Image (cartoon, rainbow, N blue to C red; front, side, top):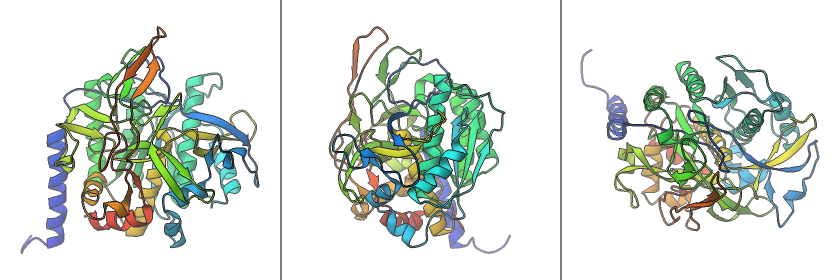
Length: 452
């Protein structure tokens, strides 16, 4: 090789060195995991999926749901969410995720997902897309009496339908772990990354980061580094127990953030309580803290050091802060989802940060089509944008609310874990806030240094 290195290559090299610096500063020394809306007894080395949902009505084309107009128990359609987060202008410009692939990793299966997705599309007038279901390690027979499997079926349904609602023409690869054991989840993630399946991966699960086997946590971090090397974007819900997580053997709560959201190579998505008018115009938004339903996960890692992109951000300590961004997660004000597991075509209002992460994955898919390239690790770009005059153009800054979490332990005693307050700029409740997508995407594209 002769001559000088081209300036574009130097730019790519500089960005790679920035990522490497983040890794060296943040490399883990112990362990982790996450995903819930209510405290339960958790077996170590499992992640759990218990999405919160409320029955909304029979599902059929032309159906109108009472919660759409209720003043006491609200729900949102895809069209309203597109309006609230300024996604409609992106779709109107022909950017719908075409040519991109969203990878969703979940456990077990949802036997009705293909039917439900097609009915969801007919009800809300969304174009059909390609859904690939991949079970690299095989599948357990579905047991409708197993509440664990039923919870995951609901999670799968929510993840697929709402990633699709945001990026209707993106292909969806649903990668299903054989079970929700950490080793099986890790195997599914490793398969998705090892086969370079898509542009963005969405995780709606986890556990307290110190409850995951330390060696497995290091292996997961290594897989995430491989994903970054391939310019894949990783997104994870920050959790639904505020500043708390379940203790490693279940039965109580302690101050903790969740993995994989706490990994510095992952963009952690917290929760908000959204209020819009009937057409989706955003009226107000606060940190999600909904009694009996859930609270936006957030706080500081005790494993990962503060990565370089968080250096100099007010409100940080010496460790990785979570979340990075936020999105609607309320149950009262949740998203309409078609789920026919009972044999009847039904719709439910779903909430939790597990509704937030897949919708952000859809936003990334839109960015991939718009920029004709992968966006890779979002965090350096998100933090750079948020610390300029463009911040107000790109984000709704959430300044109201907190993530203190109160529940009961296995003995029935009340347990409160004091959290943090939302405020101007970044905070460990909602990160930089929720997106104004039509203005955020060009800014992300300008910050991305990966080749097409």
